[in-house]
Image 1 (cartoon, rainbow, N blue to C red):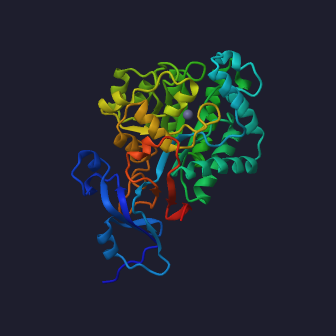
Image 2: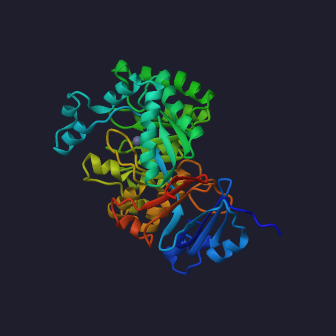
Image 3: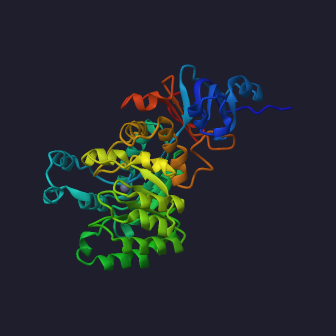
Amino acid sequence: MEFPVPDLIIINANELLTLSFGMSTEEKESEKKLGLIRDGAIAVKNGRIINIGRTDDVIKSVKIGKDTRQFDASKKVVMPGFVDPHTHLVFKGTREKEFILKQQGIPMQKILKEENTGIISTVRWTRKASFEELLEETRLHLSALVDWGTTTVEIKSGYGLNLEEEIKILKIANYLKEYTSVNVRSTLLAAHIIPPEYHMRDEKYVELIVEDIIPIIAKNELADFNDVYCEKGAFTREQSKRILQIGKKFGLKPKIHADELSDSGGAEVAAQVGAVSADHLVYTDESALKKMRDANVIAVLLPLTTFSVDGSKFADGRKMADVGLTVALGTDYNPGTSMCPSMPVVISFAVVRLKLTVEEAIIGATLNAARAIGLEKEVGSLERGKRANINILNIRHYEGIPYRIGENYVETVISNGDILKGG
Ligand SMILES: [Zn+2]
């Protein structure tokens, strides 16, 4: 019998979190949930996991060659690469001043009168930037995410707000999908806000989205999902529903920014149109949560946004998990409300403020996040045949993930078998 020669092998992991429930070697319920294996190992070939289990067993199943890269993970945690299912990664410029004014309690209406504030200023800078400039800036954002162990990311448009500029942004997401080792999903968010040239003519902008932007983006296969910001001052419940339903006809799966600043009815729209996910959900009531659950809509929670807006009211993650919703976590990386690229920090907030258990938060940042972007068969857990997206953390126990807030213990990052950090 011939044994395969792996490109890469990780051995002796103190705790290997497979996120594959049947795979745990342990009896404890919490450890089983994470598919925890003690003294674990993973062998990788051609970007895929070829074997995973106890170190002894994995070593016996392969032939270590002279070019096989070896990682000793004794005293370390090994887990799937993080999946960030909600980012606005492609933008030009930053808005620090606005952030500071918000913390001083100055009302948003007043802040928006200042120069270089609000989504519109980001739209202005992003429109002005060339493809190359924007790509360079986006690469920097992406490398910040990777540095914290993110190997799969969803990227939204939404700072172009016309056909040509939305195409430019989505082309950058697609460029990263093709030319980097990171797994990328792209989302059309033409319905982010009403652009200034359509002021007081919002129905006309909705027409542009449904008649021009959606069909052309779909035809050119530039997006996997279609998203809308359902909120007072952005898009109404009816407009949101129409935009998502028409996107669906063109093969773009619906997603929605729902109930972030008020009970906008977004969660109900998500259930009605059969959205893949509804995101934010800070003000959603229990009956809408149950409708989401019954329609299999995934809840994507973004606690860093709440934290940087004012930190007073967070989504009720505990209740969502208790009613049986699938709960995922993301950074919402964007220049207006959340410039934090770290999924480990999101996990800390999910445990401290959303009252998820550590295990729920880790699942939310990996497997459930993969579900929220339709990639759960490929990423989000460590199983034979799946893409080799693996983090080695310089901590002994997984409880250290939320506990060591803001410390970057992500030592090695592997995506599709390529070593993006460490080693
Ligand atoms: Zn968002």
